[in-house]
Length: 145
Image (cartoon, rainbow, N blue to C red):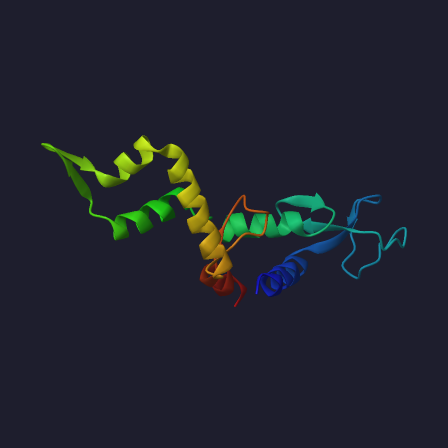
């Protein structure tokens, strides 16, 4: 599924950009520079710039149209759904989430990483940049429709 989404994003990047000859510094919408006849062309995204390839265009589209998942917030929401909001220790009522995070930050980080990995393995979230940013699969599909 990730490959299919990546392929559709690449198609979208090509649709939104124009071939561009950097040597002559002109657009080449027919795929060949009208001046030097080169077919070694960059991609031009109006209002953004020019660069080789489409990865930068995809990154721009995603940043412009979608919000990456805040993995900390998503994990905290999941934990809040599993445990009571407050924990009583003696006479103290404490936020369960804050207790878990502060008392064992290493296990908190490991549990969060496992949660994100499980969402990714289940195909609910997708990263297109090696795990730096995650997007909900349904948001990506909506963008590509």
